[in-house]
Image (cartoon, rainbow, N blue to C red; front, side, top):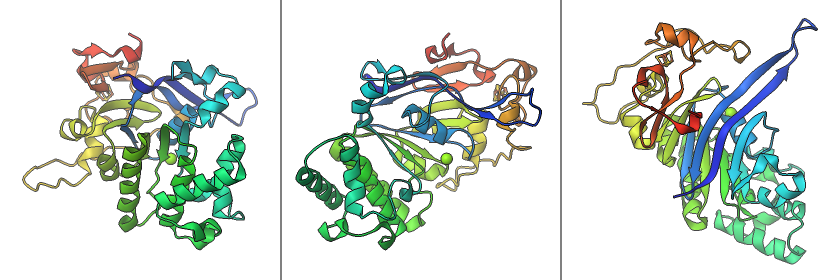
Length: 330
Ligand code: SF4
Ligand code: MG
C-alpha cells in the first residue's frame, strides 16, 4: 500500500542565545528523521522527554517552521506550499495535545471552541456548523447541554474528549496525538485510548501517536519508531519491536518494561551517564556515550540506517552486514 504521508529527512533546529556575541549556537531538536504513515494505521514514537518527539509531530504538521526535509501528502511536498495553498490541506492534518486546554479557550463556551475550526476555514453556515459540532460532541459522549458549558466545568478526561472532538470536526485524515493520555489518571487513560481506536475505525483515520509510556504506545500503535537525541534510531512493527529489539538503546528502554510472562527473564539494562545536551551532540553515533556495546567506529562515524528486515530498520553499526535503507539516501 501507498503511504498516506511520507516524512523524509525531517530537520528542525532552534537557534539559541549564547554568551559570546561571536558564538552562534543551535539546538538540533530533530535531525534527519524519516518514516512513512500508512492509511488507517497508528505509528507510535517513543523516547525520553527532550528527544524530539513532540517537535517531530509539530514540525511535520507545519505548526512550527521546518529547517529541512520533506513531508509528502497527496503527492505534494507540504513544506513547499504557500500558506494559501496549504490551508485546504491543513483541514486534513490535525493535532491532539497533551493538555487539551491548549486548544480550548477557557473564556469561551465549548460550542464556540468546536466551531472555531470551521470559522477559520470559512466553512458552513452558522446552522450547519452547530449541527456538525453537536454530532461530534455526541460521538465523544456528550449531549447538547454540554455545548453551552465552559472548559473548567469538565474533568481532565472529559476535556481531552472535547480536544479530540475539536481535532475531528473538520473530518481530517491524519492526527498527531502528542501524549494525549500522559496527564490523565490511569483509569481514564484506557477510556481515551479506546475512544481513539473507535474513532480511527469509524472515520478511517491515521495517527502519529507520541508517548513515553511504552505500554500505552504498545497498546495503540501498529508500528513504533524509537527516538534518541533527535534521531530515529529504530523502527519496526510493534510486536516485532517488543520481541526482537535491535538497537542497544531500544533494548535498554524495553528492559525496564515488566514482562507479563514471569517465565521470560529479561535482564534490566541500566544505562550509564546522562543524555548529552543537544547543544553538544556527540560525534559519530549519538548514543555512543552511553552505549554498552560502543566500538571505536561509533565515536567517529554516524551509522546509516540499516534495513534488517523488510519492516525493521535500525541505525547502528552492529548491523552493518544488512542492506542500507533507501530512506537513508544510500
Ligand atoms: Fe552502540 Fe555503536 Fe550501535 Fe551506536 S552504533 S548504538 S554506539 S553499537
Ligand atoms: Mg513532548
